[in-house]
Length: 108
Image 1 (tube, rainbow, N blue to C red):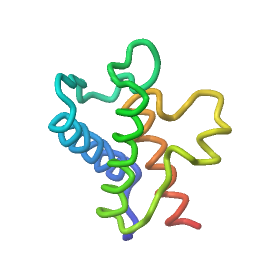
Image 2 (tube, rainbow, N blue to C red; image 1 turned 90 degrees about the horizontal axis):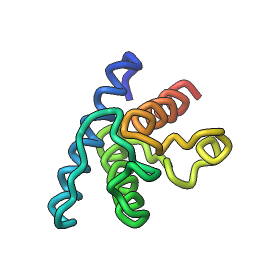
Image 3 (cartoon, rainbow, N blue to C red; image 1 turned 180 degrees about the horizontal axis):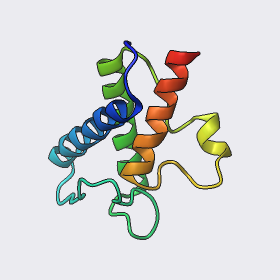
């Protein structure tokens, strides 16, 4: 992967998440997820059940690998589990987290 600006990577990740939401919406009837960074993925304000959330994360992981050529794990990630607040809380926090993983992989 070529070195890219962190904001550019995060924008790409947001687009991947939004595409994954669209794809998931085709599979799950009546799934209405607003495609904006502050949309909740976890908690009471989320419209996702746990299985749908896992399906979304797996789809995003696969799309990131396809686009960046690097496999990532956002769900079963030691860094994610050690944080005080889950990086899976919102679309924005998920995007930031995946961006940080990609940057670590390219710098490491």
